[in-house]
Amino acid sequence: MEIGNGCISKKRKLVEEGSLDELNEDLLERVLSWLPTSTLFRLGSVCKRWKSMADSQSFKLACSRIPSRDPWFYMVDADLNRSIVFDSAKSSWKRLNHPSLLLRDHNRDSIPIAASGGLVCFRNMSGGYIVCNPVTGSCRELPPVDPGQSLLAIAMNAYSNYHGSYKLVLVSGDLPKLSFKVYNSITNCWEEEIMLRRNADDCTKSNDNDDDAFYFLSTAGNVVVTNMQRSPSKQYSSVFALKDGEEIVYFLTSSGRVIACNLTQKCFSEYPRLLPVFSEYSIDVVECKGEMLVVVLSEFFESASLRVWQCDPKTKTWSQIAAMPPAMSHEFYDKKLDINCVGAGDQIFICLSSAELCSYVLYNFVTNRWVELPECSVNGESLEFMSALSFEPRIEASV
Image (cartoon, rainbow, N blue to C red; front, top):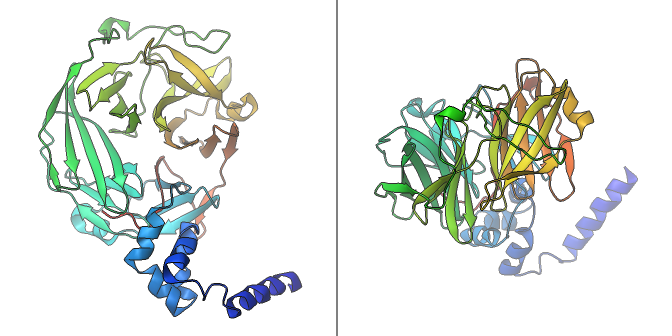
């Protein structure tokens, strides 16, 4: 207690001496904008000046100049009318106030389906879309849109958090006839539907006769023959990537192929499958720093394997770039697990769930560490999640 009280006394002395009081408004805002988001909410309790500053537009502008913030992961469970996040900076679970707009009758049980920057997009039961800042609770209902052909994927990209510039992309159709439609927040309207042509260099075309193909792993861990199955729990799941200045949406088809839709070139291409269509393996697609990656949970020789794969866009061959230590992945053997993953910079958040087991793992590419996260408990209730979306907790992100 003596050490703690001493630290508090020193902080009070610094304030009394005017070390912060003497800063002008602009400089104070720039200094405090670097605080973690969870700390920003407590600024108002320090003094009247800080409370006034925290509510100002100039402070939000200062916050928008912070290049990036450690991601929060918005969790999805059976109860869709609450907001639980995992704070990667604090390695802790948090419960947020669920946005009031999502508690209205026609928006209840809305499913979070995409995220970018500081925003999360929800889809209600009637097919309407709501974009929300989970930190502030601000929301916007998007204009109604005709779904048209069968909806395949939904992706989102935020260009500016402070100015509320973002796009929502809907990909529809049946291979090889695909199209996409874009909502632009600047104009607050849906743009005209655009057809996608098959990339002229794409030699990996769907073949109904290869659905029963087998696959093998070489001693180097590379896939020799391919095929795969997507998890049904994320019906419209996809990832948005900016690659060499081009906008690309990646998603998994029901038949098990990765489809890359180049919105800039208005074309699409197919990637070879990783696993057999009728196998019990689980797979998901993620984006990390502009790269599309695939995470696969599979079983061999009475043991489970969790690996991350990357595909060479020119040769369309897959190579392994990371693998969970066998001693850790063996716990998942014979548990009939479904994996749902999301990328965030140098990290991949992985939800593993089944009737027997529920676990959450965070993988870091830089440190090559796989960390199993603690159980989430709210008011004594242990919660289990099916999937997660990644977003940056930004108080300045506008809808």
